Amino acid sequence: MKRVAILISGGGSNMLALVRDMAGDHPARPVLVGSNDPGAGGLAKAEALGIPTAALDHRAYASRAAFEADLADRIDAARPDILCLAGFMRILTPGFIRRYQGRMLNIHPSLLPKYPGLQTHARALAAGDTAAGCTVHEVTADLDAGPILGQARVPVLPGDTEDSLAARVLGMEHRLYPAVLRRFAAGDRTPVLLS
Image (cartoon, rainbow, N blue to C red; front, side, top):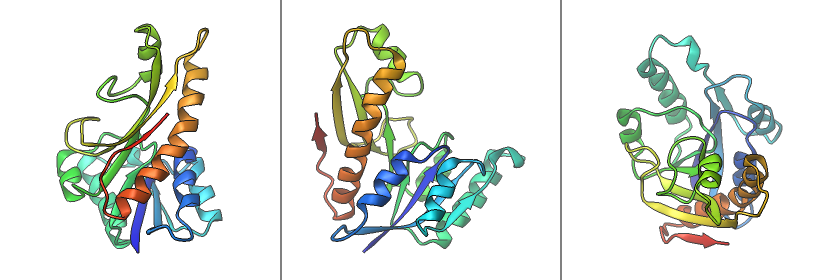
């Protein structure tokens, strides 16, 4: 049984999708939910499900290195096999990424390699794209550029706004990330494709 730590910065909807799927015959179980924001709504949701949590306010640290050192200590204490970033809104240093290389996943709200970084929905709408979506990838030192483990597509509809497109993409994130984690935890890196 693989042990999974999940990092969040907000409400934790992707974390909940992952946790709810990790039951029954799933090859993994959640062992920690961590956040860089002690006020993140997802922490209370994880605690209500009996999952240990760790909250480290990144603003209280003198440097990114000091924050990441404490974060790594908390993660390592939970002995995870897999680390899932689920709306964790901090750029991680190459040193931190190397520590978990090959076992750290992230979900991004675009069809990578299109639109790495922020403002993905606005950029897709501005470009006149007919499809948008989300990608689960391995985390590497290059932002949103690691090997792709899964993608889900949604149509861009006439009259879409950033909010309406984001809501449709988020619904697919909640399907894609659990499917990828299930496969990855079983040792299979074949990409999951949903539409």
